[in-house]
Image: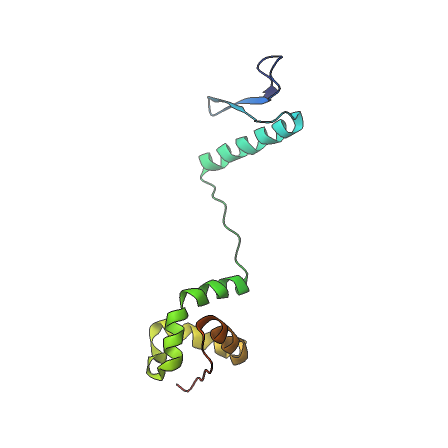
Length: 125
């Protein structure tokens, strides 16, 4: 593992290391030696993780963010649910019923009226 400048005239730092018999020589694209050292560590870590099949998981979404996305996706279905009581037993609408039972109807009413343009909402299924 080495950090160097190819010539004395060059102000950009490069790093060079060997991983699994392969030489990795890349520009750090910085004038700072400490940033170049960090860039080398990050690059080596990326290569090691990809070699060993380690995948980073995405962070879990907040419930409020996931609910907003879900409501946007299901806006048409939910508006149909409010106007047609017979469709409330369909497979795609079992989740809203469970959410209203767990989190309360008032939260669900506010979300539906704000997202789907529904004035009144009843759960008379």
